[in-house]
Image 1 (cartoon, rainbow, N blue to C red):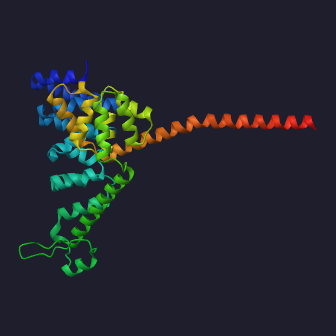
Image 2 (cartoon, one colour; image 1 turned 180 degrees about the vertical axis):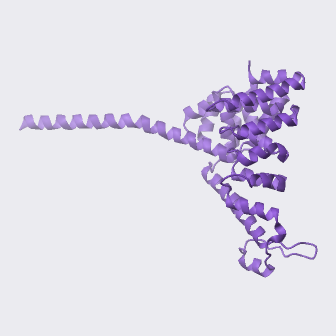
Image 3 (tube, rainbow, N blue to C red; image 1 turned 90 degrees about the vertical axis):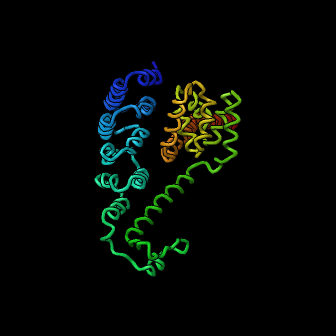
Length: 338
């Protein structure tokens, strides 16, 4: 029985069964020493559609369980972190699935309650810690005069002079915000640098048109070109039973969710038999960070390079052997002539 069958049984049944299935699935996953990518994807497929049908107690239980899990599903962790802090706290304090950018975004959306929980993380980034301290006690931070801010600010920065109805921005708070903007700008630039520079409208059109032909080989070729991987790796992305790997490839290309869905449904039409499946796809795509997708693409590229090295190794060795044999034959012939 597939994960979608379990979901339908749980949704049609009373809420108690959905609660038990939600808890049991996470408990079973946490007992795995090193879950595979497929098992992580299956847990997300099973639990995300049930999320709205389970109680606060079950969400709190799952958050606590996943906070101790080394390989927790990222999409489910991020969904739980959007809950009130009394549910999300264990994950905010301990989960390794949350990156610095995740933490900054959560603070921006949920404010001080989430920030206080995040402040308890071990090895918290100093910039994030500074931001939380500013949020905690902004009135105790020494302010700077507008002239000083204008002198130290870059020429391209916009300097806002406080008016009579606007409080002056504390110097430390502004400094923390600048450092946070620098972190996120550097993250975006590194993502652009590592991504495919040609992944624009032309790439999307090529992927879309080849996907709609119904010939999988055409699409696999276009995908290999877009991600700069070999054909066999691109073929493996669409040869699996679910679209998890393809999702990472499309996210690495920074496609919008509507474009990514159109391509995915063309390749995996059987995966979307009802609107709930579409909602699961959109949730997973929105929660999949481009950094994580780019990491996977880099892994595929490394695998492609490794294959090339393995393939060229024996060829080079054979060439050396043939060259040595030719040299020996030439030497022998010359000796006989002498």
